[in-house]
Amino acid sequence: MNREEYLKLVCEKGYVDSDGEAQRFMDEFSYRAQKIVSVSFY
Image (cartoon, rainbow, N blue to C red):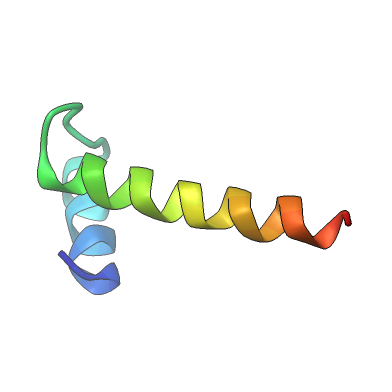
Protein backbone atom coordinates (compact mmCIF):
# COMPACT_ATOMS: atom_id res chain seq x y z
CA MET A 1 0.00 0.00 0.00
CA ASN A 2 1.24 3.48 -0.78
CA ARG A 3 0.27 6.87 0.61
CA GLU A 4 -2.32 7.62 -2.06
CA GLU A 5 -4.04 4.24 -1.60
CA TYR A 6 -4.07 4.73 2.16
CA LEU A 7 -5.57 8.21 1.94
CA LYS A 8 -8.19 7.08 -0.57
CA LEU A 9 -9.21 4.18 1.68
CA VAL A 10 -9.50 6.38 4.77
CA CYS A 11 -11.49 9.01 2.88
CA GLU A 12 -13.88 6.39 1.51
CA LYS A 13 -14.36 4.30 4.67
CA GLY A 14 -13.70 6.89 7.35
CA TYR A 15 -11.76 4.37 9.46
CA VAL A 16 -8.97 1.78 9.31
CA ASP A 17 -9.55 -1.91 10.04
CA SER A 18 -7.35 -3.04 12.91
CA ASP A 19 -6.12 -6.14 11.12
CA GLY A 20 -5.77 -4.84 7.57
CA GLU A 21 -3.04 -3.61 5.29
CA ALA A 22 -3.92 0.01 6.04
CA GLN A 23 -3.25 -0.56 9.74
CA ARG A 24 0.19 -1.99 8.99
CA PHE A 25 0.90 1.01 6.73
CA MET A 26 -0.21 3.40 9.46
CA ASP A 27 1.89 1.60 12.10
CA GLU A 28 4.99 1.71 9.92
CA PHE A 29 4.73 5.43 9.27
CA SER A 30 3.89 6.17 12.89
CA TYR A 31 7.08 4.35 13.92
CA ARG A 32 9.10 6.32 11.36
CA ALA A 33 7.70 9.60 12.68
CA GLN A 34 8.54 8.62 16.26
CA LYS A 35 12.13 7.89 15.26
CA ILE A 36 12.47 11.27 13.52
CA VAL A 37 11.07 13.15 16.49
CA SER A 38 13.16 11.28 19.05
CA VAL A 39 16.39 11.97 17.14
CA SER A 40 15.67 15.68 16.85
CA PHE A 41 15.73 16.10 20.64
CA TYR A 42 19.35 14.96 20.98
